[in-house]
Amino acid sequence: MTIENFNFAGKKAIVRVDFNVPLNENGEITDDTRIRGALPTLKKIIADGGAVIIMSHMGKPKGKVNPKLSLGQIKDAVTDALGVPVTFAPDCAKAAEAAAELKMGEALLLENLRYYPEEEGKPVGIDKEDPVYDEAKKAMKESQKEFAKTLASYADCYVMDAFGTAHRKHASTAVIADYFDADNKMLGYLMEKEVAAVDAVLGNIKRPFIAIMGGSKVSSKIGIIENLLGKVDKIILCGGMTYTFAKAHGGNVGKSICEIDKLDVALGVEELAKKNGVELVLAPDAIIGDDFSNDANQKVAPATDIPEGWEGLDAGPEAQKKFAEAIKGCKTILWNGPAGVFEFDNFCAGSRAIGNAIAEATAEGAFSLIGGGDSVACVNKFGLADKVSYISTGGGALLEAIEGKILPGIAAIKG
Image (tube, rainbow, N blue to C red; front, side, top):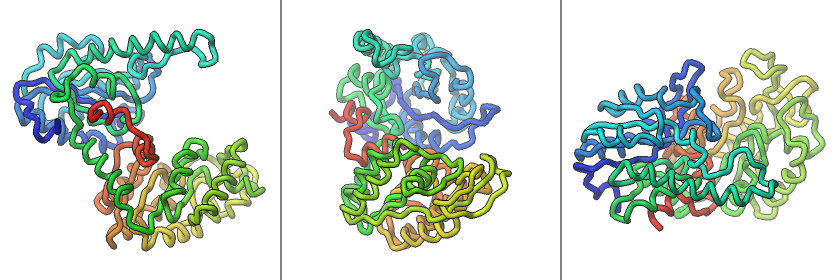
C-alpha cells in the first residue's frame, strides 16, 4: 500500500516521525527541518478526513523519564506547523483514552517513546558480558512486542515516516508493523523520498562520484568509509578525524581530538584507497585554537604540526581550496559531516567552503545528497538548502542504506 493511494477518511493513523529536533537551553527548537519534513504525510491524513497520532523519540533518555527530553516542549511548534489542534499525551504507553477521544481532523502527540526501554528493546543496566544478559535480552524482546502492540492499539493504520531511525529495529519503527495487515501499513512521503534519493545515488551513479565524510571519529565511520572506497572516485575525509590521520604519519596534533588506538585503521584506509584507485583528500592545514570556544585565539598551522596547548577546530585555507577543487566537476556528491566546529562562527569556514563548492557543482548538473544532522544544519546555516539536490533527515540510516544494508523500518513495511 502507498500513502498516495490510501484514503484516511474516518481512520486514526499512528505515524512514526523523527521529531528528534535540536533544542537550546530554553527548550526552543533551533532547526525545524525534521518537523517540516513530516508535514506532507501528516497533512495528507488530516486532509483526507482522518486523525493522526504522532510518535517520536527525542535524545537518549535510556529508558528513564528526563524532562529535558520531553516532546511536550515542541507541542506548540507542531500545532503551528500542522495548523490543527494538537493534544499531548504525557505517557506514550498510557494514551488509550486520549487516542479514543481524538476526533477526525485532530492530532495527538505522544510523549518520548524512549522513556520506555521497551522501545529500543535492550536490557538496561546489564552489561553484555553478564551471564544473565542473554536471558534479559530475550525477556526484553517479549516486552518490546507488548509495547508495540499497545501503540498499535491506538490506531486503524500505521505509517512509517522516520527515516532517521529506519536502521533501528525498535518497537515503533519495525515491530509495530506486525500488528497491521499489508493494506493498513505504509511508508510516508518523506520515507518514499529518502529511499528514492538513495536509489538515485547508488542506482544511477554519474561520475566522478565524491563522498565528503566529516565528524570527529574514524571509528564511527570506518564501515561506511570502507564501503564507499569501493564505489567512489574521490573521498574527502575531514573534521576531527583529520588529526588521527595526521598522528598516524607521526605528526604533532597538540590537544586536537585524536583516536590514538585507531592509527593503524587510518593507515589501512589510505592503503585501501590506493588499492581501489580512489583519490583520498585530507586537509594539509588547520585553523587551530587555544581553547574549545568561538572566542579562542586562532591561527593557521600544518595539520601535522599543531603546537601543544592548541587544537584543530576547522580546515585551514589550503584545505578549503583543496576540498573545493576536488568537488568541482563531480557529478554525484554525498556529504555527511562538517569540516570543523561549524557551530562556532569563527570556525565554520571549512564547512562553508564545502557547502559552497557543492552548491556550485549542483548548479552545473551534479546530484548532491546531504545527510546527517550536522551536515543538514550546515546547509541551513549557510543558506544553501535550496542549492543542493536533496537533504536527508537521516544520518546513520542514510549511511547504512548506502552501505547496502536492509533497513528494518523499510523491511517491516515492504517485507
